[in-house]
Length: 82
Image: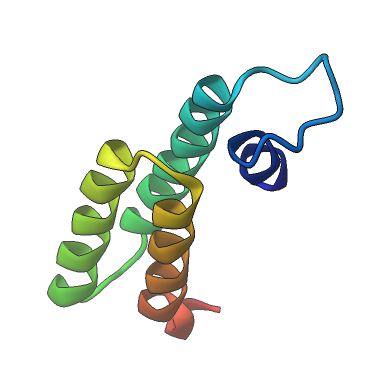
């Protein structure tokens, strides 16, 4: 996520890292997998619905700030599962 944020801000000083679009796709893939793992837990209907919505938003997200908002919401939804 840090590398994505730096790439979006033009602050990437490491030449071997992929461009921002590729990094965004990778982060979105990781987040989608994490949400899928949580969806396999015993969740309430509201939690399942909320996580499914976050998964859809993750797939449509276009910036790191959108993803960070989704992460914060996901942490609130899954807080009881710690």
